[in-house]
Image (cartoon, rainbow over all chains, first blue to last red; front, top):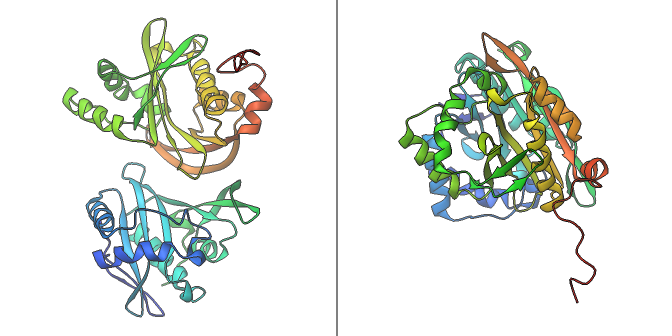
Length: 180
Length: 196
C-alpha cells in the first residue's frame, strides 16, 4: 500500500507514489553516484516493469511506501516493507535518486516522517534496516530518528578495491526523539 | 522457489519435494512446537492451497526448497534463498525437523550436508541464518558448523505472550573449508587417469 501525504519541514514531504514516480526509479538507480551503496546498476528498466512494480507496491498488504518530494518534486522513495503484523516489525529503506540534492537533509526529514508514522499510526513495535557503514548520510539520517546499531556485517561487499561493511540498525518507539 | 535435488548426509537425505509431502508440511505448520522454534513458513491451509503454493514454489529461480528424509520417511524440510546473480551467497530461511524426531541428530546431519552442498559443490562465498535466541538446538548447530554472530535484534519475534531476540549469523567459505574441508566432500578426488 502507499502511505498518506505527510508534510515535513524544509520543503520535504512524503507523498503516495504514482506510476510516473516509479518510472524515475530506473534511471536514478543507474547513476554511479547513487549506486555506490546500492547495486548492481543493471536491471529490467522497461516501463512495463515499472508498472508491474507499481501495482505490486500498491497492492502489498505488508508494506507502506511513499515517494519523497522536495519542493513538490519527486526525489526518491522510502517505506517500510516485510511488515509482520503479529510481531509488529518491519524493515525500512530510503533511496534518494537525485544525487545533486545529497547533503540537504532530505533523507533525515523523510526518515523522521516515516518513523513517526510507524509509531503513531501503524503502532509498530520495531523497525530495522541495513545500511552501508560508509554511507554516513543515510546512517546519520536514521540515527537521528532513533535507530541504534544492533550489528555489523564485516566485509559485506567489495567495491573499488576495498571491503564495505554493512551497518544493521533497529528502532523502537522509546528510541524516537520527541521532535514535535 | 525452485525445488532442490538430492543431498546425502549420513543419517538424512535432502531430496526433491513432492506433492505427497504437503500434508505433512501442513501438520508441522500447525504444530505449536514448530511455531515456537521458527518463523512460520506458510500458514496451515486447505490441500488445494498447498498445491497452489507448491506450483509457485517450483517456478522461482533464487529460492530453493528441499524435503528431508530419514529412515525412509519424511522428517523435515529446508528452504532458503540464493542472493543474486552478482552476489554469491545463500540465506537459510527455514529448517524444520518434525518435533517427534527431535534429539536424534537429524537436524545436525541434514544441516552439515546442506552446507557441504553450498560450499563444496556450489562454491558460494558465504551463507547466513537467523535463529531465535531461545532455540538452543538451532544455536548449537550454527555454532558447530562455524557460523559467527554479527547482529542481535532485540524483541524481534512474538510468541507465547512475549518477545524473543533474534541472533543473526554468517559463515565464510574459508571458515567452512578450514573446519570441514578435509572431511566433508561431495565427491572424491577425480581419478588420475580420468582426463586422458
